[in-house]
Each structure stands twice: as structure tokens, then as C-alpha cells.
Image 1 (cartoon, rainbow, N blue to C red):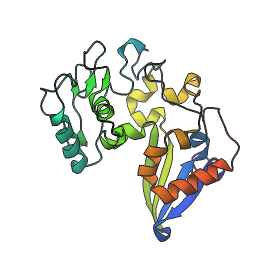
Image 2: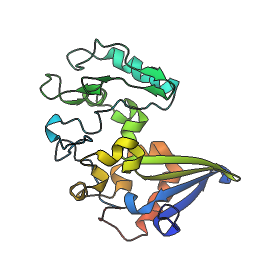
Image 3: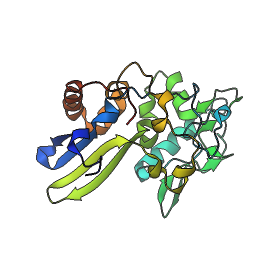
Length: 230
């Protein structure tokens, strides 16, 4: 049995009267992984390039649907050029046969402010949210706020099964195997002071809903803590 089907590594919870089944990667969610952007992150390039400080932002992000694309474009259009390096670039979102996504400008997502930009390095949407004392979850694409949480969906005879797990190299597509570094594989990223179920509580509550999140947190707290990488 593969690890992803082994119940020893997952907890399962039902929602929506049993029509939705959540399978949660207990090993990753109980680990002490933490984002180390700016503190050792090497990026997702074929060679380690920590000096770029671009983390996962060297690619355009895939947006979940047209509604999210329009929301992100509208938010981007409100940003001042002093805070958003590519404020004059249009379009801020694009569409192709693979769906909606943000364009790449100068080898990074259009919303990425490069090191040296006076308005600050990093995601312009994230920086704008912080400046407004808002939660960046409410400003950024869901894929970005969840990273490195991966959600796999499949339909079964009983309803929808959603597997929540750590993002792995194959999830990046062909380029995943040639990346010089990936944080979920990197021992140095497992230095957080809290388990992922707590450190990413806001993101997971949005994904799971409050009731399922609370049930998941209770179930994970009854398991031995694991600082080891999955």
C-alpha cells in the first residue's frame, strides 16, 4: 500500500452529511515545517538562488477560477506604483487552455517586487495587505496562501474525497525533478515552533471550514508530535 493510501499516515473526517470526505496528511500537518522565505529559502530554480528572494514566485500562479482571477486583477489595479513594481503592467491576469493565471514578468510573477525595489521585496499583494493591517489570506490567490499545502480532489460513489497533504516535487510538473531545492524536502525548513496545523491555522480554516478544522486539530493533537520531514 502506498503511503498516500495508508491510513496510518492520514486522518479521515466527514463533512456535509458524509458527502465530503477529507483525508489529511497527519505526518506533514503535525510536523514543524515552516516557511523560511528570506531566511534560507533557495527558490524553485534548477540552481539554488537564495539571493533572488523569489521563493515560489518565479512562476505565474494558477488561479482557481474566473472569479478569483477578477478579484486578484481588481486588487492589483488598486495598488500604488510606489508599492507595486509592475503596477503599470497589463494584463494582471491571463487566460489560456490551462485556465487563469498571473503572468510572468522579468522571470517572476507579475506581483513579485524584486530585491532593491523601494516599496519592499516580495509579493505586492501581501505587502499591501500588511500595510492595511489586513490578513494576506484575503488578498492573495488561494494557491499562494495554501503553499505548500496541496489538495487532491476525486469523485467517488459516495461523494467527494479531498486529500490534503504536503506539496511534493511531482506536483510542480516536469520541472519539479530538476529543482535544486524544495522546502518540503529540506531539513532546514523543519524548525518551526508550532505544528503546521497551528502555524497555518488561518489558511486551513479557510480550506476546511471551522468545524472540520477543529476536528482535525483535535485528532492531530492526540497523535505523537513529529518534527521529522514527511
